[in-house]
Length: 154
Image (cartoon, rainbow, N blue to C red; front, side, top):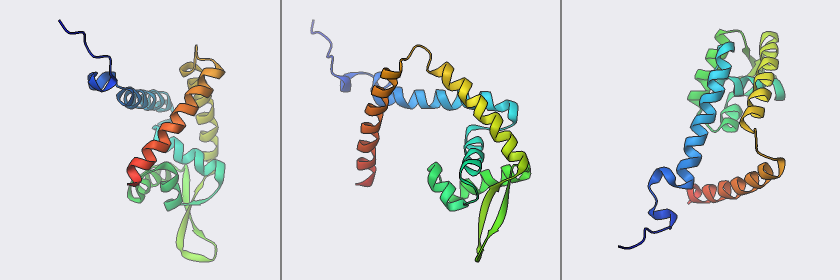
């Protein structure tokens, strides 16, 4: 009887590195969504709010680019946050055709809670993984990200 191949490409899809990364990303997103439920937010909404607080008023298109999503999807997120008085749209000084997304005072307060949730969750997710291991993992993932960018740019 022939011995099974040890080549990664012969492995079932759920055992490949890429599948593991995709599954991990979904799991991390789910963990954030679960923790952020107490604030009535999901990870995408929390990320937009945190970015608005961190960077100040920004164009919706710039937020969409930063988050890697389409402008329509970003519009829906901003609408949702605006309905809860966490962000507001403001006219851009000097160009009334452009609207900026800015955090409200209530949004700033919620953003502080998001930061605390994020810090606690990251500590849990990183448990048992040394700083050196995280640094090595980051380097590998950055190389993989460059490869992915090259593939999608073709």
